[in-house]
Length: 208
Image 1 (cartoon, rainbow, N blue to C red):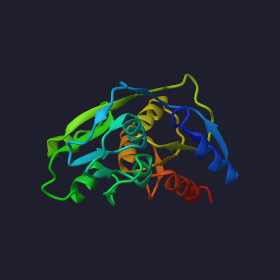
Image 2 (cartoon, rainbow, N blue to C red):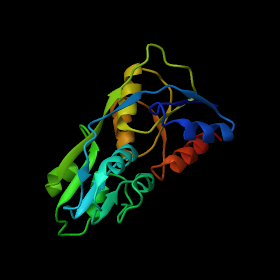
Image 3 (cartoon, rainbow, N blue to C red):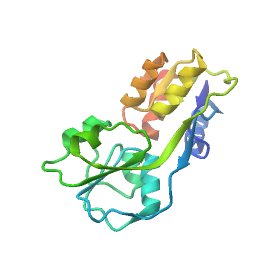
Image 4 (spheres, rainbow, N blue to C red):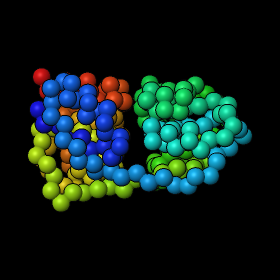
């Protein structure tokens, strides 16, 4: 099976390797480009909770972080691992899922993530928001032919939708699925765990 991998350049290698191990042909076509925002140190010592919602945000925060967070909440096990561990990883990998599991009173919160990220946690918790990176959606002039496309972010889902291609998709999680369906992309499977293992398992489930 020909699988279109849309992850940003430099973030696709492990998924490509896993797909090839399963006997699939991985076709790399990035639909998202990441841009770091700033290099200044980020002092997290004054916060009761530091929240990260993506692997990219976790990597950037770890690169720039000064001090030790009192407690960390992360959406997804891979995000938690990228930051070196977390005190809370919600069962439902959305901001709403995290909000439901945070203890109260929550205290002071820093939400570090992508510029333009959904503001559910910021608005509900009165959290400080720190944009660490921005995403640029890429729409190629011609999309390679494939049997399946892998979408690992809402940005990739929106960019893919703009191509108008009728290739069924596997999504990494509910927010990506929602973005894909809004863009009129057919989602045939969603990862049960919102990480690389979950993506690979979801791909395997529709490739049988």
